[in-house]
Each structure stands twice: as structure tokens, then as C-alpha cells.
Amino acid sequence: MKIIKIQQNVETQSKEAKNHNKMMQELTDKIASIEKNVTDLIELKNTLQEFDNAIASINSRIDQ
Image (tube, rainbow, N blue to C red; front, side, top):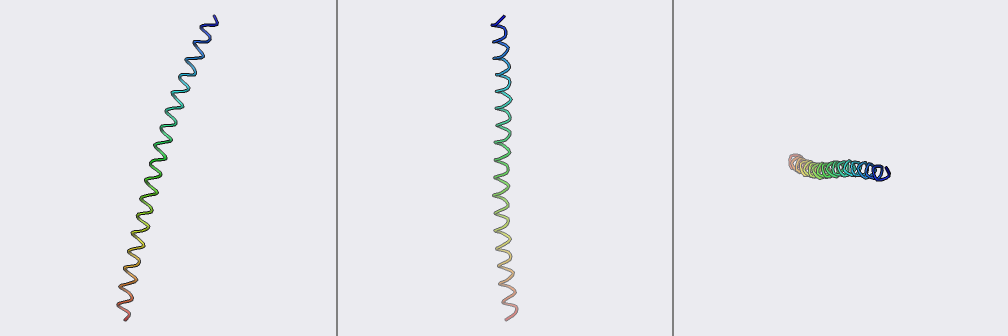
């Protein structure tokens, strides 16, 4: 009887470990996606800053 109980506990722990691993992989994937989004946003911010600088330069030439 004890062997069956131990076997059931091992099976339960194995299932929990698989679920934990799956959850960890999902979180790792989400983190990677967020990091990519942050990188894309930084690039967009830099591009907008360059655009703003170009507009300012054009406006200063026009004003002269």
C-alpha cells in the first residue's frame, strides 16, 4: 500500500514539475517579447528624435 502511495506522489510531483516548466517557458517567452518591444520602442524614440532634429534644422534655415 505504501508503494502505491509513493508512486502516486511521484506521479503528482512529476505532473507539477511539467506544469512548472511549461509556465516558466511561457514566462521566458513573454519576457523576450517584452524586451523586443522595449528595443523597438527605443528605436522608434530615436527615429522620432532624429526627425524632430531635422524639422528644427529645416525651420531654422527657413527663418534665416
